[in-house]
Length: 132
Image (cartoon, rainbow, N blue to C red; front, side, top):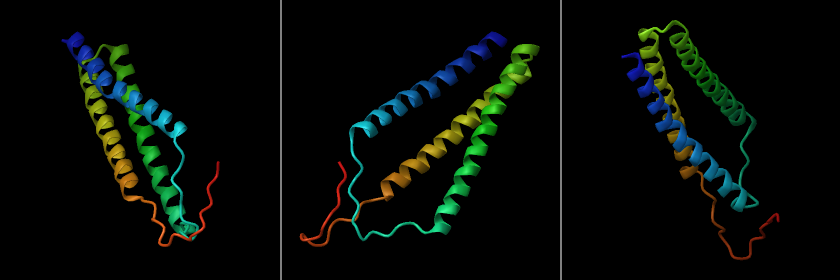
């Protein structure tokens, strides 16, 4: 029974980690080969309060992610060291929670990227600054 749970645990990890790794490598390659879209010169910059709020949100998300990773590693180490089936089942629950949280974060990121758009130029005689 313990072996089946351990094999299931490895399968869950492989199902979530391998595609995420492949996607992150693909995104890194695409970001390295493409340039950032051109922003209009008169587009507003985010103010200090919005930047501080965003930094606070990112810090909370990072803390939650680190906590879930520590929980997953801790329950897995405990299950391996003690041979406990209950801890192995807890590891599986923690894995599902971590996968769900990562899926939520990716959904938020994708939504933010789709809503952030570059404002098109209003006139053809506008000057645009492009870095090379």
